[in-house]
Image 1 (cartoon, rainbow, N blue to C red):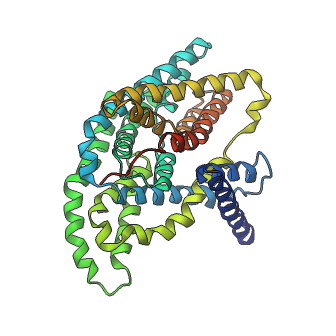
Image 2 (cartoon, rainbow, N blue to C red; image 1 turned 180 degrees about the vertical axis):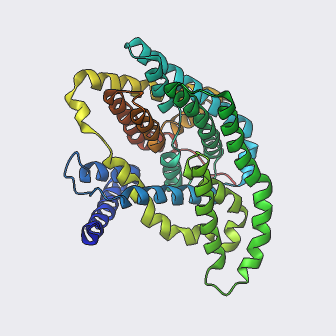
Image 3 (cartoon, rainbow, N blue to C red; image 1 turned 180 degrees about the horizontal axis):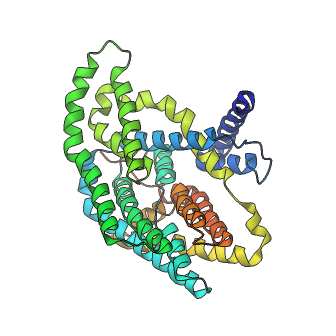
Length: 386
């Protein structure tokens, strides 16, 4: 049994360092997210190694990400996403095609196998919208058209990323099945469509009845149950759990103001979300700086990862204007835990080398770290919308 004292002390260190460094970066007019990720680097195994190996930390990080996207969903109405649906679709598709091609071709050029090139391309595809959502939430611009385009594109991006992962995994195993790919696609699209079309109606009928329960904060309790359930379902069908959490919030968004759901979620948000960013930071592998050739490869892959989203998503959002298109492009840059998952699958299958795994982790962390300050600078003059 793990030492409960050690776990509690680690939790204290994580939360205290996240808040302290977050406050420091806020005072320098930077996003608190950077401070929280840096706290993870400092506490992690690469520096002071003060975070233990308990399984509770990745779980807390995942719960933090779920609460983050649930909160974002509560402030994002289905109708708002639908109004930018076409733009989000184009942004998502182009934002998948360009990074994949860049990564795939580069890895082939440096003399790796086709399967390795496919895995690198796949790792460069999926956006982790948690970083962008946090920055937009901190700036109070989640209600803007830019934010809606990015959130809509991120959900579509995750479905496309799921299909790409199925393809490269099948190639790696030598068992590629078009039937399986079709089923995965239909499953994901069906899940989202069912929630938006039918799920909302069911929830809207249930809420008034639940409001009459004697249980304290019965509606809020139902909202959290709904969030956890949809996160579990999304994870079960191989979508990211955060997609289920975001959809849960979006389904409940029409009832947000009436039942103060965002306000009641705020304490959970302030406590749990920092754990996600600190744990993310603790995964940074600094050993790559000791291998110049590997570092150069990682830097080039990172540049291609940024350019792929900036060019692809930016082109898809040109109808919003050049300045907003650039914001959308950078908003889709972070890869987060999704890229790490793809890298770990490639390693477990022995489809990629440990060096390429390190390159992916570097790319993920670099895109995660550079996005907040850039987004903050680009969105200074973005006005809130009604």
